[in-house]
Image (cartoon, rainbow, N blue to C red; front, side):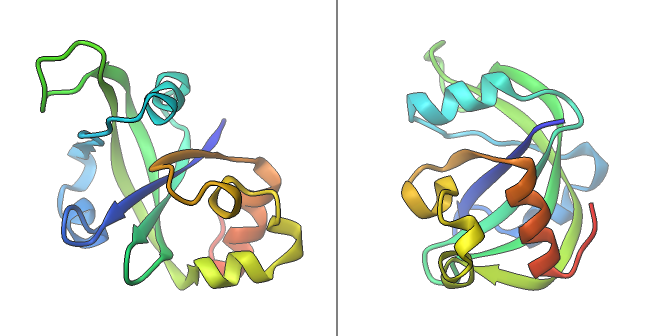
Amino acid sequence: MQYWLFKSETTTWSWDQQVAKGDAGEEWDGVRNYQARNFMREMKVGDRGFFYHSQKERAIVGIVEVIAEAHPDSTTDDERWECVDIKAVKPVKTPVTLGDVKAEPRLSEMVLVRNSRLSVQPVTAEEWRIVCEMAGVSD
């Protein structure tokens, strides 16, 4: 299993909207960055991810699961763009803010710290374990 982080502005797509989609989940569409798209191409069904609210909140608020591998993004006719489908698994007990992540020395190499603008990014197994611990959840 691999781990990921999915970033979204609450005004575009929020954790509550993701939860409302239930087991059917939703496409993680609209990504127009080649590196983020390539990460989605690496994802497999069953991979887990953090759901991160960007902009004002800047916090990991939930855990999601990849339920469909990369396929054409339905929001464009441009065949270069693909997306995965994800479903909400559970909220975190304690949101983990960007400040919390930056303050944790063991997370200093996390992509979220080094390239915080990337909307879809990998998370190592060790980073996953540390953030889950900080969030008060088990995977």
